[in-house]
Image 1 (tube, rainbow, N blue to C red):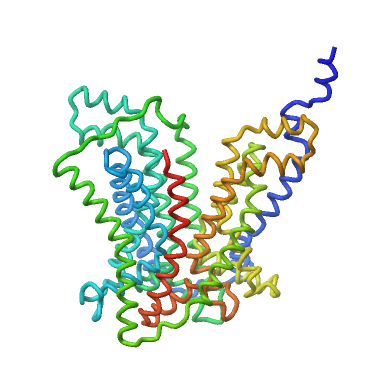
Image 2: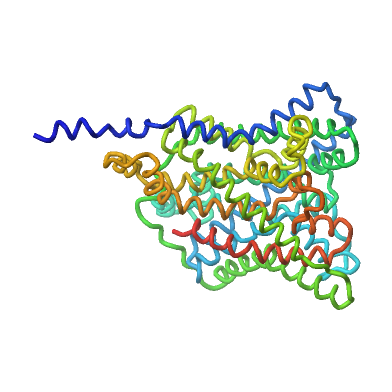
Length: 524
């Protein structure tokens, strides 16, 4: 009989997956080392050196109040807009519905500092749209961040709306409840987890924003940190403010994790497809008009304002300057950072999907903890670490790429995890059972399974690095000017034409890959 020998030669599934597992754990640990730099460095700079805050208590209270007001206002407004666009594109029978769904997400391509630039160019004494005072301060920051963070809520709420069982709403309708009553008493309660997640996501983004509040002159923690960093030789006070801001971000992250742990996991999609709501007359026209207005405001307006600004500048013979060098630098560093980050992300995705447990949970928490930190605090921490412990890395492209990897690792790891969890690990076990070694199994089975996620993760990291401002501003080598740096510095100096030209190039480079990623993510 051959059953006995065959059974003896073929290890069990769990045994196959455990073989050689420590290699993945070591690789994942190495990949997470850069993520430890910000918190450890800030703690050492503040606690280890006994630094003082150097900010009066009244000023600190003002920064706290300003930051809290902006975060709350933007969160409420952006989630409301995102809920409206998500509900309309998932529940209403619109022509080209998937196209509307993708277009409502595309404003993610517009960085906050480009949005602020378009607001500044659209208003003021020579405004492209209206010659009125530019709404600097709270109002301008609130408008810009609300409009351009709404896609974060839109993308988070769409899966939540898709997973609601239509039978619950139909039962309420059958009992005589109006459409608005069903929405308020049935839909919204079931959507609460997605609403909380989207609100915390928008809140974290607003808390960490640097570009918009700097250009629109609204004093929050991020603007104050950069002012202290650039205005004093002793950079420990900026590190202290960075530590406070980091603590606020961690509190928000812990609240999100604690709430998510209480939410029961569901099976995803309902058992049957939901019939779309057919509208006619003015409700249909209002729905399409509202979507069109938002997309024109969030995507069409910045493009139009910057294009007109460039055209006017060229007519008046203003110097735009060549953007070729900045574009090449931006593309080059973004491509390298994307490749490095997906290489770091692969072992992290392997241990979190193929070896789940408490330790892999800590790995994932450490990864997302670094991602949640405001990038201005990461930049200040990275500068302090380099000056104290790695001077040879200070203001080098290698160090800049390493910090990019620490910041954007979850984007690549999350996309790779998505591909790996869709493929059964039994395929890898079968390969090992047929006599292939770990390297052959990795190359012929595991990597092909993970390839779609690796490509999507690389695209997300590429887009994020192209837009990244505060970390690039603090860590770039001398003379290394990217498109983001050109936009920020030119706008701050009043060279709107030059900034608008750089903004158009940045959006042109970014919008196509983002469109492809969003189309894939939002497909039914």
